[in-house]
Image (cartoon, rainbow, N blue to C red; front, top):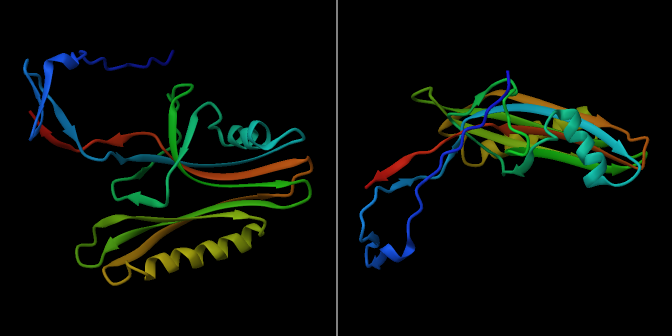
Length: 209
């Protein structure tokens, strides 16, 4: 079945019809406006890959690592290291559109021939000690030349450091998941990467007028 993308088209607003007062924008020809809060990443999948190339990194080993991870057809953006409480692990969607934006938490290591490239991500979920409800998640990334085992040990220690500095009193840290990629490139450049990829978002509606 052929995938079909649907676009939402809004009616243009003539800027000449809008005046500004002390309270904000007022349209002389009234229209409905929706104010959204900061969007919240929801469904995510985890992937990883390696690549090596004799030409370059970005358009070479990095691209091939993205291909190995199955995300080379998308425009990649990166976040810092926080998981929303509503986030849900899913299989990689099949209906992602070529060229769409995939926002990620990514660990990426690029090394030269003969030097180990290791990337790893660990994340765990915070649960409120009183209500037992999931609050959110913490993520740590590693990129460098340690072995996968050494990187995993460092990631566990890093996650515990985050947890014990600001969260331990109120929350329990559970359900930790670790993913690593590690190899020694035989070509001039090599890249290892691990990524948490978000596929959709919740938009809180703050007001409608």
